[in-house]
Length: 188
Image (tube, rainbow, N blue to C red):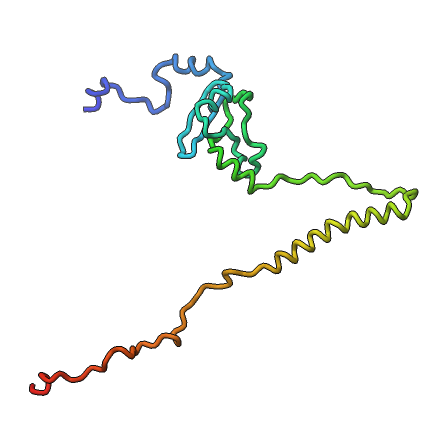
């Protein structure tokens, strides 16, 4: 029955191509990128581009969103793609709502670069300069100490969950009369 449907030939199990031109077509594009440019939306929808694409063409389609690299959730201030960039195949980018990126930028803090500190102290400095520097350093410490005192003086509003006390509940009500036997029950 299968031979009638498929033309009487059994398929070769060697894996050879039926059409020898198929191999030539794939071999004629050796510089073809192995993976496309993937743009992933919040719902999981994926757009694929096989050529280099300017970022502005994608950004214009989604005005309420930002085009970002995968590390947007770790470093949101560096991961946003600028409109003048050219996106190449093989990259993976996300379409993220602007509000989400703003929230991430507030929560994730940039690594602070501390100013270089001098390794040696000049011996020609006078004692008055040294004293003024020590006073300047003490001022921020005082401000921090005052702020900590203010925070410690705050009243705690929700120290724990409220739990009812059963000792305060009296189930006997003074308004309910005790049950008396009905006059009909006496006759039975």
